[in-house]
Length: 503
Image (tube, rainbow, N blue to C red; front, top):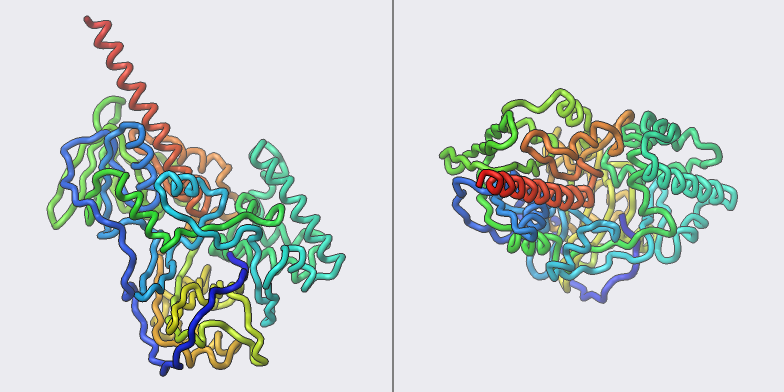
């Protein structure tokens, strides 16, 4: 989410002829440096996956003196942290968009000397569209924004609702599901919670709905009220600051790659054979360049998306409880669309010429209208983030058709917009982008707690361990590394004690 805080000065170029092209991955992507490392016969920890959680786990383990080796199925690092570089200073994120101030990634970036820039420092609310009307945010506080579309009574009702939600969040953090009201929130959808709350006007409900749907990449009927509550901290007390990496978020991946140890790229793991008794090594089999390789390790970290875990044969199989914990997670969907425009047409205007803010939330095909995110004297990158069912629809029809639909939608706001578009690029994550806890589930339940514990030599890390976003991925990596390092140290001390007794 975002708010408009002004723009840099810019030059003006000539209007381009519309020649929209469509490609997946056609841009010059920012790529993390690959560490060409032949896999060893054995190591302390094998980490499967070089996305954010895998790299963080390796970094934290190596700080503690633990040997690691990463196996990554793709030819690039970073997973869903991805920056497209269109040249001449034009970049745009098509993966992780922002880093909230409460994300432990902030501290790690500082450790690595990676510069962050403030996207905004005081608020986390955005302009939004409801029933075809845009309710803009230009400057001012969240309450100033509410005053622009709510009556005094409607505003007080929304403030009271948020105050109650803040109190519920504190109870959820302190007592968890032992609190009957927190348990009730887990069992209902966010839609049911909001629509059954007395006093919330239609516009107040729309404001809540859009801000949470965008964050969770799904319709508000598809995620539990408790899951939504756990993601709502950024709206309390005027909002939470938000940052991005100076020069593109992929620069953070490049910095992590330098300190996370050896990595074998394009190595798809096929089997993980776990010991049935404590002590023997875990055997990890993978295929690279059509050749099968094997690494033995004391423990293994599964740092792949939750929906990819079953593509790896795990022997003996995970327990029925683990299968249920993974199988009852739902999938949130995002699609990023970047349109390269001439600089003159990079910002939306209404038919009467009023310039619209840079970030508008919608529950239609346009999703989040981020607007112009980077520009130079001649061109700009105009960014959209489709989510939920509208993102899923990109997999059902030709991309050219979907982009034409988006252009038609944008032209309904600004009749001249499509005349300024030069190229369009579509970036999808299939079959999912983030985990979603539906009604009856939440990150506080026993299934989630189970996945935070090792399963006979295998540790799980990823966003789905704690939340729906990068903060969960980072936290899971940090906590898993601490736990693994402690286990290895305890095992080493036990062996030393046994040797001393034998002597």
